[in-house]
Image 1 (cartoon, rainbow, N blue to C red):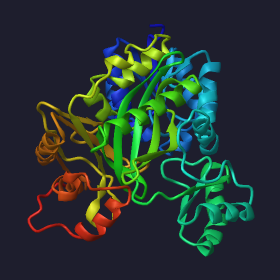
Image 2: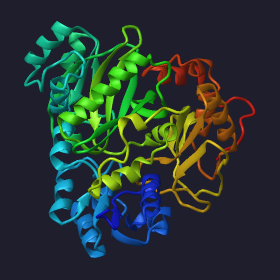
Image 3: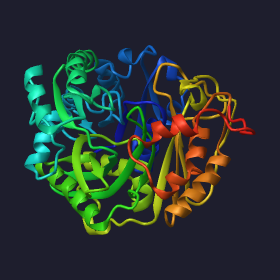
Length: 461
């Protein structure tokens, strides 16, 4: 491996995850941090830590110059961006390479191409991947957009071409709504992403959100099967599992093969995720986007295939070929991940930063908790509320759910509110157990089944 040291350009649980993976490969680790994260677990675990600025992300984790300067000062060979922040910033990837270091991820050209949702859609179509009916590219004005929606019919999504993470999306059920939302969506996209470009997609009613994990070294490409990500709130994933629930074998093969075809078409290098909408009724699937980074939910894939995806990313960045062939990758059992956030699910998911007074983590076969928490840790108010991910694995989905219920009961975090009660309720729900859900299921469930704490609920904060 040509990489001997790596700088982690992120924070929280993913920074801890990368440091541990790098150390397992014998790499020296350097953690950059904001002033708010000086006492973080990642800082404690890294071989070296460098302060890169004030708490505000724009002045620290999003400050390309500060991150590159820290990497040069630490004389590292590579930078791993994790997810979020600079992970899908093509300019940052270019700056890393220009500074003489490896960027742990695809090259800037692939990030730029696949990061533009319209361009990615065109790449997918050329690779033979089915796409959702809609505009062939960016729509130039309201008149052109209105002509498209009259052809494909309502409801439709107005989506930011440079969007991501569920942001920059408006849904219209009529021409009146469409004409009202279109200029609003453009202004919102320009403010959020610096690009007001829009495109149009047909809404697939009661669709499931399924994504395929891919790996490539620029020459060889494999899939690591699919994940189910349909339980979402405000288009943000809450609960993920692998493999997808009840997916027919022939659909799985077509889905995964299409993701590999897309990766091959752009000479992809590193880990990535190809996301789809799936229609249970027709058994059709449609391309949504590509995430050119490691995903929050990558552990469920690791649990069912027995491969460390972060270590694989580091090896690929170091110039090594993929360590596995497609025939080496098989699904074993089932895995579920619950995102544990510092939010109060009974109070509209209000964020609750503060100090963790006590922490008890469940242990045992098939249980994993990826986190940056420790007793006495002060959760800062400046960043995403994700505290960690509780991941469980079982011989099948029923066994996995049973283990999840036990693990959730054993996860005790006091001093701050968390979303543990939400996941306990979901794990006990009959529809969830039967796999009867889609991307709009959770929001309706929250309104009808999760209005107030049940009597006798145990205290978790």
